[in-house]
Image (cartoon, one colour):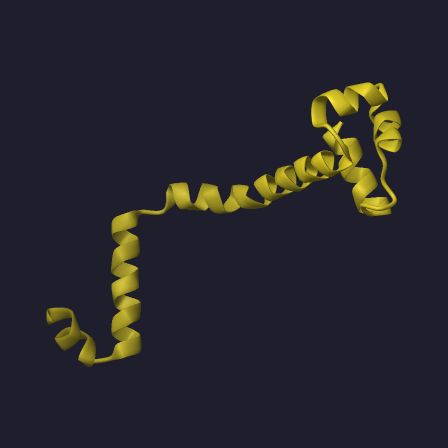
Amino acid sequence: MLAAAHDHFVRHGYVGTNVDLVADSARVAKRTVYNIDGDKETLFRAVVDEAIGIAERPSRDLCDRIDVDGLEDVAADLIRAVLGPGYSRCAAC
């Protein structure tokens, strides 16, 4: 049902999409859409939430693979490169 809603929102925009179109495309009763997702606004939010989750997945996967200790070393190297010799004195403070 979310796939059908997604297709309609992409093709017709928010204003051009309605629960009847989504129900027909998903081959479910209009009442089913209302029972599961509520109104059009709630359905739209569900589509957006799903899209955000899909977009975030690669970042989450990357974060799971990062070696935190190595990342701290990289950050320290970058700070040294940006601040130059003054970094050593600053870090000792």
